Image (cartoon, rainbow, N blue to C red; front, side, top):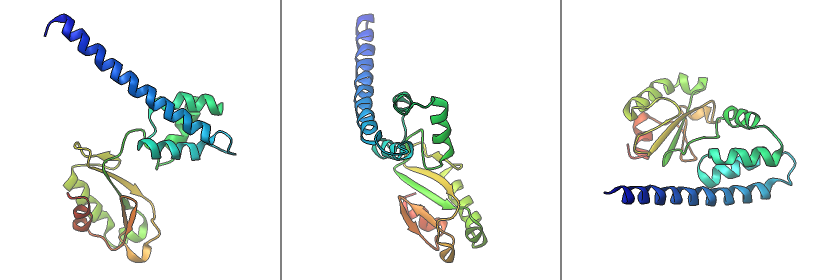
Length: 170
């Protein structure tokens, strides 16, 4: 590849990235416009953006902060405080394992350890292939059916490491 071809390829790549960012910003601005009239629009707006993108992209921070007249630091504080908000895309499958006392008493800690070990992950991580994200939660309301988990938004009771791993094809 000569110098001209190399620079042409780099410029084309930049143009594609710029086009993707522009499309992302149009969608973000539309979501802001949909929520700006609400009382207390920040949390519903963040949920809408995460629903649209699977996470809250960094490109959303400046437009949100400007529209709601808050600092980016305040926005970051809200995003990082609420555990359901992500700054990176989650895996295809999201496993949430209960870490509350009832689930721990029924073997939840050992189950969690087995799942983490099998996937080669720690909490809040995603497998390299992007298939599975694992997160701790503190009570799913299924204490009578402990240990409990949520897989791809569906509650599961009396789970084992094997049933959870089978659910996500791991």
